[in-house]
Length: 223
Figure: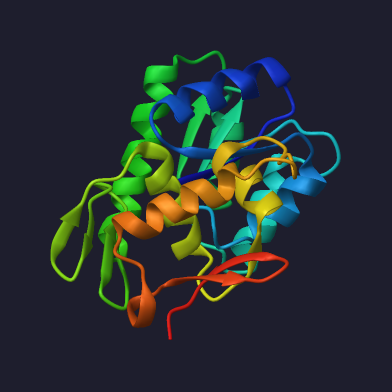
């Protein structure tokens, strides 16, 4: 599962990001409202954690804009404001949950999981690409009915490809989203991981899903 965190307080965002990544979520962080609004439209994110007090566009305006444009992915509001009026305003604009600072990470994690379960009940959490099936809730992967054991990073890499099917991805993009750090073009660790993933999912010859885009990167083809 991939989470967009829009939070301008660096200590808070680092605390949330580390905790969620330890729980095997993929987390992208934005520190301003303008950047956060732009990224919130991406279909790659399963849930948005949104602070109200942001530089640029504030969180409530971001929420209103998303709902006006029929973006219905779950939104959890984080804020230092804990008045009833602020809570009512956020919920009326379409927030799915509300958590006032300071908060424990355990409570945040429980609320995130609850929102994801609720969202999963509204839509299938099984994604199928040809004969490959991936369960976004349990992280189980099967191909042609056979279970495949993947490491956490291999699973994250496969989920990223599936969420971006039929889109060419360069190595920089893959490194930033799956490993969350800048890609060193002098290394080949992306290629090593992809080759390892290909072997595990039996990706070869006429049964190939992940294709090499020469001079650029890789693409998962659904057709």
